[in-house]
Image (cartoon, rainbow over all chains, first blue to last red; front, top):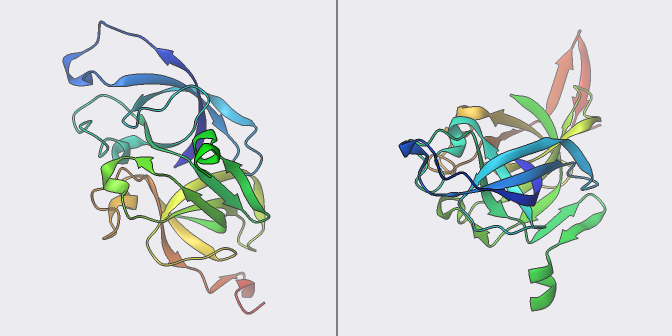
Length: 103
Length: 98
């Protein structure tokens, strides 16, 4: 899975029936050590309810369609988790605002 | 499959239901000597009990679903083995014993 940051929303009412009604988010892919942009901006289906600015985990390909009720959906990139904490070799890299608030 | 080094862990409470109970590792792809590449960080599901510093074998794509922990999970990368030694050209390229 890859890390990304939600940077927007894609609205598309005319869609094929197998697409379902799930939200489509605009995501910027990130490097997992620096959280700096690395790779492009993609559109991902979202089964988690992620909002703008949140760090998320994305799954791609056939495996991604095991999420939610996407089995027959024509999607190849899915937000499958919202990251609360990320720890690397030198300790904590990221802690979500939601986690900060509850700490 | 690819070789990756475990850098740390990722924690998530809001996630797909099929990911409940899985352990998530932050990893970076490495060369056969175990040295991290400039790019190639990702998050993988841990199916073998790996820890920080371990070099692991990561299965990607639908193969990542062929473990008991990930059979029904939307995982496209799973750590499926902890690497002890890598041999190449008649030499030990990587070994846990140094």
